[in-house]
Structure formats: C-alpha cells, structure tokens
Image (cartoon, rainbow, N blue to C red; front, side):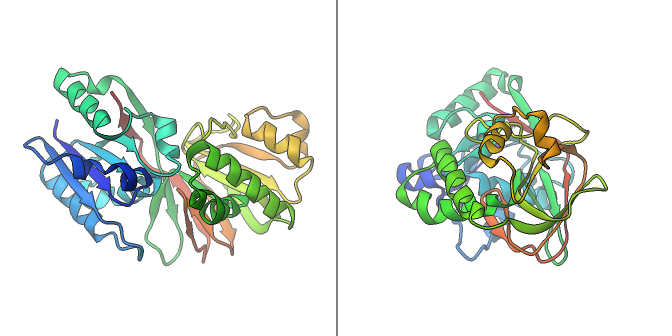
Length: 311
C-alpha cells in the first residue's frame, strides 16, 4: 500500500513540535508533502499534492493537521481521485481535532506514522477502521464544500469567542470547547437568537429564530458530547434549539449529554437523522472551525462513506 502524508506547517501542534514533513522524508512507498497554508485562503498547493498522490497510486492519506485541513482535502477528493477515494489516517495536530476524536487515530507525530507503517508492513492496517460520510454543503455562487461539523447561531458565536478569547490564551481541545460553549451562551442568551429557516427531508422544523443549530456526520463531539437524537433515517445528524430557549440550562445540559426528557420536544427542542437539510439564514455559518458567509439557501447532504484507519 502506497501512503501519502500531508503535513500542515501552520497547524497548532506542528508550529511547536515540528510537522511530519519536517521530521520525515519521502521514500519509495511513502510520499511526504508539506503544505504552506496561506491566510488568503489559497489552496493551490493542496490541489497539486492530491493530483500527485492520485498519479502515483496513493491508497492511504495520512493527515498531519487539524479539522480545517481535513475539510479542504475531502472537498477536493473528486478533483484528483474521482469516485475512487483513498482511505485516511489522522495524526491530530490542530486546536480542536474533533474529527480525530470521533473516528480515532494512532497517536501524534512521528510515533503515529511509525505505528501506521508497521501495521501496513505486518498486514494488519485494515483491522481497525471507522467509516464516516462527510457533509456535502452547496449554496449558490460557491464551490461545493465538504466537512464534518456545520452550525450557526450560538455555534458561530462559540467559534468567534474561541478565536478571540480562548485559543489566543493557549487553551485548546476539550477545555477550549467547553469555554467556547460558555462564552457563546453568554452572548446569545443576551440576545434573541438569529432568524433562520430549517427544513429536514422536506419538512420545515423551524421557521422562526434559532438559539443553535448543528449538523454533523460525527457520532460524538469533543469533549465526549452526544447531542443528537437517534431517530429518523440518513447519515446527517442534526439538532435545532429554538430562541428564546425554554429552561435553557437544564435543556442544554441534557441535550449535550444525549439525555432528552419528554418536555424538551414539546418546548421546541429538535434532533434526529436525515438525508437532506435545507437552511436559509443571513448570518455566517461554521464548517469545521471556519466561518463562511451564507449568501443564499444552503443544502446539506452526505457523501459516500470515507474509511478512517488506525494502528
């Protein structure tokens, strides 16, 4: 099995400890590519890396980066690999690493890569596999995007708070998520949510104001939160909480822990699984930690399953 390694120099842990591309060189069966992520959003280096991987027959992509880089890679898969997507192995080096926390990983840094190579050489690399689809996000005037965690309202405020106050203080991963949730709730509860319309598999579930909306193909969110209700069909997990939010403290806690009470649905708390979501809003949304302008109706579906392996 030929392996391609993609390292993002600007990922949080790599700026401190060095990326795999700085610590390992390419060989006959391992191609190591170093990304130089640009603040202006230019991803042309990634386009070239994926084209090279496809041309050389890479079957497994090891991603030494965070959630945003994984999003950018998955968005571009068809450009290089058409429908024959490679498997992935994650070496989490971002600030939150929500995707790796759900699908699993083999550790960090060079030790993780060594474990993967040893498992490949021993013929055991395919024994630990998690499959997840990605979200397919389409909206007018934009290239379709793929990612794993979409949201708006309090979620957007949480990401803003994290960028302004939490990550800059050196706090990351699970604690950062909890602090961001607290900051978002403080900001949003001071207001009245945002106007948004959410349609789930053709049925409108909220045409008023939303306190928070999330959609994801992940089963567990960092740090070990399980907010989605197991009802309905499809690969897209979703939730929508109305604004103003009734009994918000106990409701949010029970939602986050996956322990809903009967009164919650009657009060407008909604969650489940779906094949197709449609969203209309005029404020930014978040996809895997980055804000995007929602200048038109947004459709959310699921891709084919992606194989995530670990050793």
